[in-house]
Length: 640
Image 1: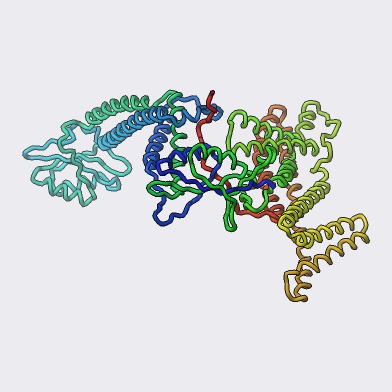
Image 2: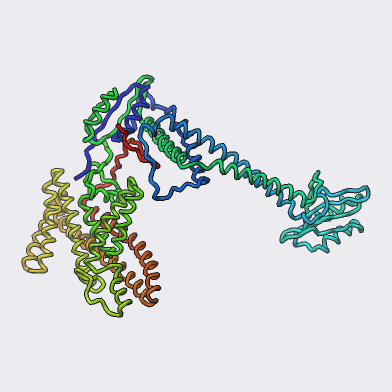
């Protein structure tokens, strides 16, 4: 219905014009390039600039990340994007300025990292001195002609008297002093005769002692800790200065964002050029484009001095899929693409799927208050965030589904479910004198809601079969459409007629069943197999019945939303006026969040399984042209 016809393009340019051609294709944004097989005397072109562009992009990305972290930029979610012309975006001045700023920022960052590493090492060194800070002797403990001293640690599990006894057993004059202790170790100062020093140390090692040496440090631990603290204070000042050097103005930050998009686009063009083939003098590449762009592309290529050739897809080709829909239908493409893009030679399901999806979503959520919030959220996001791509489609979808929800909420009498009657009763003590439902209330009449849900299901199943019949007729299979779809419709018509007139209905039902028995085995060669295959085809009625029963989830989801909302309002009523609004706010935020997800998932499920299963040919490859795709900025037209 709305799958755009594609054509192949073959392009030939001089080798030195390769970069110019790729820039041209990116600016046009209408050609998807494809891999071109290399032949003799040709080769896949190796990009000479890709590595350099990648390095520059990495530098810009690093600088932008650092600038965002250390700058006090007032850029929130709703801040407008930078607006710039294409000429300015790809100008050498912009890139050179951005790279200069990036180099400065990255150098400051390297210096900052070095300072932070020095601070960490000093802090770790200070920690080694901390257990000895109560020792009022130099860390390189004094030695004499007749005595010697040393420091050691012993596991905390060993008692201090046992340690002292071990030393005295070797040297009766040995002394052990505990400087400090923690949960793991005793930190000890030991004195003994010089002649027995080695023996004392060996005896303590039997208790898992570790000798500690601070050779050459003629200061106490306190003095050393203070010295390190002073050095750390100096480094902290340097760190602060380096962090200030990483901060940038909003203008510089915008410059980095612009350069990021410019380099990303240039790198993409370079990578895409590797899909072509080249000789020392020429460059050749192929791709796909929408047929409607043929005239425009011809004019551009002729102006750009590029040899080109357009052709229709050949048998065996798999062109990419591009759908074209109205502004009202286009948002639903995001739902279809979450399942799979349609096959190029298939059919776009969005025009027929969109009304059902919006209808089912509104019925499942079925609350005018929730729908109003969803609609306003979508409008706000489009106005303030100015989203692009899939996110924009999601916000547009939110508005459409919000409108549907408001309508069904009004029909079913739900505005934050029974919030209006509850508030009225809370402040007046009376019951609201009229019913809010314009049609009926599903919580009070679930059977009507169930019948309504199943009828809607039947309508969509028939619609799916109608699309399948259209595809068969389009492909010249008129009789197949009559046999495989038409006779089922006759049978369905007979089943419905039985409700009003059983005799007439049975005749129509029988005619449809007989038609199926006589035609569904037509592919078989044996007449007996034809008959039994046709007879067994009637079993498919269980599949249709099962599909229609799946639409009972419309009842389940609508009741789920309504019942939970009603419980929230009832709980709020028990807490008084102030408590009511607190419970109301928290409860309904939770309920709308849960049921928004449920309504979307189950509406999509009905499309994917029940509806698409009747006709949809999936497996398409979405059309992805080479184009200037910016993440951080908006490109504006050149001023004349």
